[in-house]
Length: 431
Ligand code: SAH
Ligand code: SF4
Image (cartoon, rainbow, N blue to C red):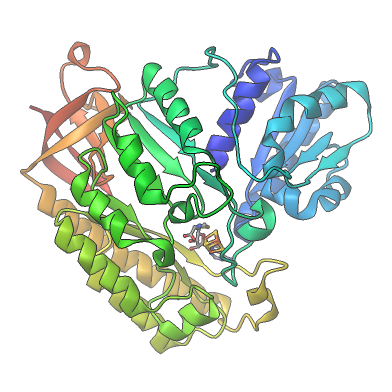
C-alpha cells in the first residue's frame, strides 16, 4: 500500500514539475513514506533520517518530509524528535502532497497534516494521460482503504482510518488506463479487500461482483488481490476463482495463529476450523491454487503448545510462502495493554522454527514444479547470471527464464520449462 501511495505522490509531484532522481545529494525534495506496523519499521526510519539530516546542512533549500503511518500516529512527536523535518503528512493526506510542498516554500514553520479525509467515498481522481513513467506489466490499484477490524495487535485502523471503497466505474476507468499504457496484470489492493463495497458507494456491489466486472476489461491478462480477511472471504469469491480465467490461482489469506484461544485474543473472530473449511473448499474448486499467509509468533500469553498449533496448521495447509513476524507491541492497541509475556529469546526461537518449517514446505512445493511447464508474465530483465528475464507464474512464484533477449519483452506471457528451484524461486528455459 505504501508503494501505491508513493507512486501516487510521485504522479502528483510530477505534475508540479518534480522529476525523480536516483541520487539523494541531487534532490530538492526528499520524502520518506513510513510504516509503523512493527517497531522495527520505525527504527529503520529513524536511522534513515539520521543519514539524511546532514544533507540539510549542505543544501539549506532541501525540503524533507515524513509521510505515512508514523506521521499519522505521532506527527508532533516526529517534529520534536527530528526538528530538521519540514513537514509530516498522514496516509490520508496523500492527495495534498503538492499543497504541502508549496506551503513549505511559503513559510519556514514545520507543520503536521494528519486529518482523515471527510468524504464518504474514497476517490483517486485521474490526473492526466501524462505519466512520470510507464506502468510495469503488473500494476497496483487501490480499491478500498482503511480497516474496521481492529485486531488487537494492529495499528492500521488507527493510522489509516475507517474502511472506504472506490466506485466501480472509477476502478474500471483506472484499469483501462493502466492497460492502455502497458499493464497486463492488475493487483487490487486494500487492508481487507473482501470488505469492498460494504457501504457508502452510490453503486454498491460486493467484492466478487467487482472481480467479475474487472475480468471483462479487454487486454487484462491476470488479476490478483491482496489482502483478504478470512471472515469476509465468501463462497462467491471461491466461485470466482473457478469461473474467471484471469483470476490467478493464488490466495494470500492471513491466519496469524493456529490456535483458537490466541485467535480470540487477537480478535480475529474466526476459528482455525472455519479457516481450514474455507481453504479446503477453495482447494477442491481450484486444485492447483497456491496459498500464502501472515503469521505472528509470541503474541501475549502464547504458550509452547499454542505455538505448536501454528506449526500444525502451516503443515496442514501447505503454504507456498509466508510473511512471518515476531509480535511487536504497538502503542494505542488493545494488545499493548496485555502483558507481553513471551520473552524475546523465545519469540526469536519460535520465529526461527516457523521460518525453517516454511522453508521446507516451500522447497517441497518447488520440487513439484521441476520438469514442468509454467506460464510466466515477463516483468523485466533478470539479475541472475545466465538468465534474461524475470517474472512470476500464476501461483506467484518468482521465475528466472533463459531465452533470446530480442524475442520477448516485459508484458509477454511465455511458457517456461522449470529446471531448477531455489527458495521461493523457479528457473528454466522459455519453450
Ligand atoms: N490487513 C492485513 C494485514 C495488514 S498488516 C490483514 O489483516 O491480513 C500485515 C501483517 O503484519 C499482519 O497480517 C500481521 O501478521 C503483521 N502484524 C501486524 N501488526 C503486528 C504486530 N503488532 N506485531 C507483529 N506483526 C504484526
Ligand atoms: Fe490490521 Fe486486522 Fe485490519 Fe488487517 S484486518 S489491517 S491485521 S486490524
